[in-house]
Length: 164
Image 1 (cartoon, one colour):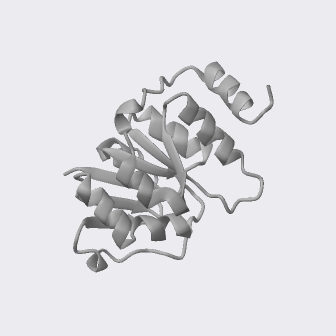
Image 2: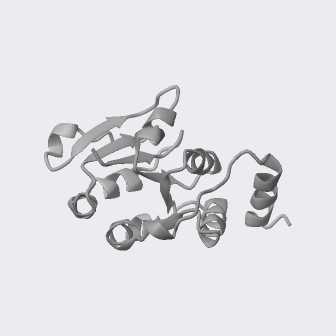
Image 3: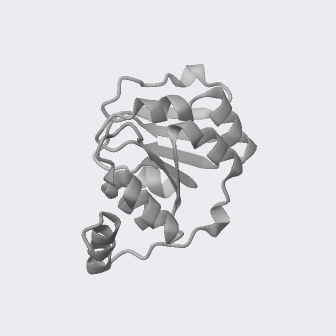
């Protein structure tokens, strides 16, 4: 079953959870052949009830000791733009769509997403453009991110955050 895994990390990102479970977003996912949606909602107040989503197989949880299995089972990962979540998703070798929280004031997340996008490792959008991105995204342009070279990642982060 073609699966999308959504993670907000340890934070709350209600706008992402609300948008990915909107009728329009679910229809876009179904149109692309996704049949299962797994949501890690973190500390958010929104915990969707699977019974309210008969059009797709939906699971939702707040936290688990590890989400690695969820990532490995996913065909597409939709993630907030936290560095840890991005790195974990890229390390799992999965297609990654990062949703930047444009309500954050000092937004290093956008810089990280832009740089990883420029290097063709992920696609990114905001909640406002999520459904349209799901409809139009071309995942074939993505290149694998080769993990295991911490100095390269440190240099990359320095560059993305404007420290170098």
